Length: 493
Image: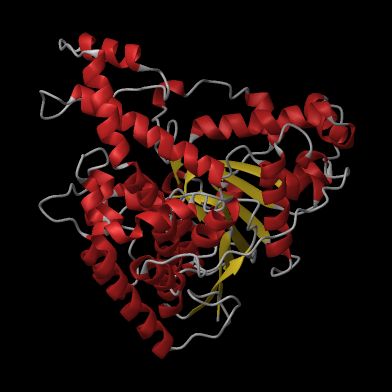
């Protein structure tokens, strides 16, 4: 089975020798550039942090930020031309390019007006991503499959498949809060659009006994799914949109909401509590569009169930990964060991800084103007922190507004029981200006190494699935329409 693989612009058939070569290269890469990739994460505002970057790259770093073309060439394409002089800089770009799965732009699709669910209360990017994902997996699945939409969110994909594509789907949310929000949105959709009025009338009028096909296509489930889940049992226990409306499941789950958690709100019932019944001959396809953290791996693990035919997942939110889901393939563990921090750096989850997983989840095609704005914020934050840290070892991080001015900084310091003159603030500003180029360097290194890290996460899952004798591939799906443009597709042999 052909697949995208680091360093290749098109799908190829990989073999053991290529896999061994890849791990050899990334082993060397993480050892060689570890300091440049990691150190700035934990020492962002130190006066001497520029020491992590060879001084010879300063001119090339500043050249990169001069024009859109330069920035795009270096960060998005991982290439250098003759105007770059530093051999170290050129080598970093070249070494990175060999370990990155190149990104391919996918053209925007024409969203037909008959697709009411994609033009009603949904932003254009979400609509494009939903349509592109649907076009991808429907070309590769049998017509009789039942889809399981894990982490269904607002239900954009589920409602589109059920109402506009006439596909059977179970929309699954582990969070009761999100499941309620999902059902409310879909119900509102039937109220507003004439195309879906038969669904709305069926829900509201008990005299209508013939269920519209679109309504029958969609089932909703609030449950935590894992490899012990039987999709047949899940389908049997799922409720319809009419069930939801009649039961008035409108209770708030805000008190259970956990900010920045991959489970937001009270967790639904365990699938072991579901009513059991005799199995059917149904065949299922698991979908995970922008599957957060471990959820993408959960999707892949469900392929072990006998009645699951295939899995399609677009992973995202890598910082939410736990060590149960990354790394999965044994050789990747050695690479993570290379990135474990030493005594001078702070360790976070997985033995490597969480910031690195954030890097893997960056938008890698942002314009240079956005990058300049990011560096400006780094610089402003550095000034504030240096003013606060003059007589202290540590301070709690506080919110700030870039460009607030010296008066605001002076007030912040005074609120913490210290005093600082305008002249002292000016001196700190001048000192921070001296190493501003290193902040530019940091942004370049994290944007490029982030692509290396995302590629490694994808390869780790690809090879783990293949080791279990599944057909698996990495492919382009929605590049340019989403920061996470890759899809992992796996089927049984």
